[in-house]
Length: 388
Image (cartoon, rainbow, N blue to C red; front, side, top):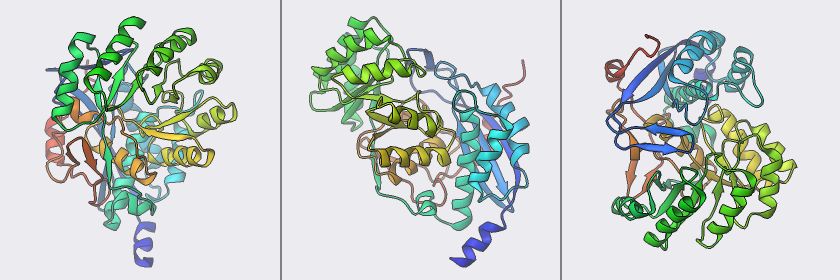
């Protein structure tokens, strides 16, 4: 143990590189803010490679302008021109110091600045440290309460008439839980889609996600409709910064209100806890700027008695693995929305990768994230997103 600690203490960050890669898209996918993925059109992910004294780690950022403001172009320039210079020469083990350096390089807005870009570097450092010690991320933390995480199948954009086929596809792959994207239609149509999912999967765990689409009054009407369908959570029904509205909704909603976009930084959760305005906190690695801040958010939720659920950002396998390590560390035992495999292929992962069987993801046991990245494939897939 002393030798391992000594080895880590000597690791100094010597390079940070970005690669915007074009990954094959399997299915189209949309949220209330717009399109996330289009079948037949490549999905862009920004991979970040960090090296320190011969060791390498990889992280991922998922640009989704329909969901948040960071784009592939902004992520690449933020990492290359601001975050990388801020951490070069720093000890690789000093994750807390790296977080501070990030905030000096790109300061916080209302809650946090450039979380997706910061996440990719933070996750890459976790991967590097685990690989340097030869242990998975959970062992690095001394915290791993689960070996498997159940995944939900996403239903998005369908009409009520089309839902049965979507649910049947998820069932065929072993999924026993479903998450429905709402806010894509009028209220009555949204409710009809959720009802159709419940009828097609009467015994499944079921929750809905509005991605900030509703007003308070509309959300209350929808919550009353959802209560009859045994929905376990109503995720982010209101705009992220509508704190007063979310408090009012939480007081009146017959369905537990879960917060996602509202919880960018752990301090956001602290605010909602103080105001008694949250039932469920969604843990999401990229939204919260990486694993370092996500662990703080999860620990705060546990200590405050707030139920934790898990979600992702249509991540490829690097982001998927990072989320699995986090959710396993905090023992999240409800189905989670880690839907990357449903919508895209992680072509760069040509060795060890995440094992998913019958709708259940097995938390990787290899060093670091447990995903082997083929750098030669990454270079083949790389595109210049800054060239006009």
